Length: 173
Image (cartoon, rainbow, N blue to C red; front, side, top):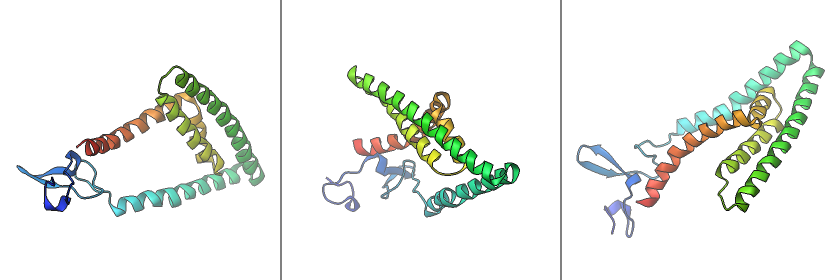
């Protein structure tokens, strides 16, 4: 049955929904609350969107203008195009390599977790290479190189592991 009237009929309080408010007193967590009692704030989301849609494009534009002043406008455009074609070729090469590893793992009856992560990072790299700008191109090419992709995969796994553990506790309760 319900643990408290706020849970509603037929709903049980999960471990992720409980937190210690005061010693000896457990309260029900709010919807959207993260483990540890933190809720995502509107300011945090706004800050992330501000960085993604204002700060990064502004930085890209600044770098493009600086490169254009240093080597010339035509040379800057040519460099962006050449880097994009090189990145697309490298993305295709790495993508087919990872696809082959995924197929081999499936044929052996293994779950290709690492290879699927690599595939997602290669897809992200391709998107970064499609957007004009040197900073995105650098990040995209770094994601296409296996050693730096391994570092990114480890970093991403740490972030996702924390989020998935909280979701798993909530689902298992």
